[in-house]
Image 1 (cartoon, rainbow, N blue to C red):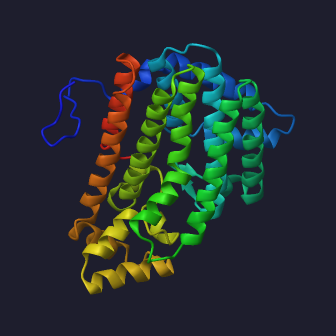
Image 2: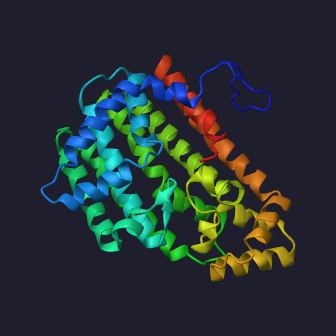
Length: 337
């Protein structure tokens, strides 16, 4: 595949898009949906109601897609790929339910959050149900490596959530501290999803490591772009409120870089906004992250992670699924939602 002069992977307009990637795994995803519907069944009606509400809200389903693409690239066609793809979606959904309560979010994927609709207690408890159901399901794989990978990932994600809570309203957070949070909170489940494909396929250690590197880099790029969209997105497109990160006092990469690059007055404006969680001067903050070049620098950081993902994917066997993994990383930089 052709390289880009500046070293980044470049796709021509005629090559695959994210939609083509999703088409490749569509039959598998239909089977994953069937597993999800079956395993959401509970004798307590509210459990299914809340879980179905958030799962049916759409979303990109990137984590199960990632697991299925890795299995496809490595030639694994066993039924466990559908079960474990549902497991990672359950774990992800549980984190969303808990996240929205912690963040006091009111809008996700263009509609009221589960906590807004059903209340905080129901959201927390159904999140707990999804975690525990995921652990029941992973036992079906009868693999200690699978259980170790998912148990470790879940623990790291929980640590990342607490770390982010500790960092709220901390304007002194640096790039390293920011990356530590997103590699724990977001990238870890991407990493586990890709690693599971290699474990299921019985791949050698170097291939498993390449899959894990791909997942971690993809997940990091995904979150960095998500943080860009909080200052450069469209609320209607994104399905969430613009400025939510600032309202929650999160020092994300656009703000960290703006403080590094801005004048003393600009630094003070950003610092005060993080420390107070005020969005009164959101328009000024957006102008500062643009004028200082912080948005562009953040996009460059995401591009570097996407390239790292592509480099890792290129170590896998050359087939349609590997090509789709490359496309997924390339297209990530164009996301608006």
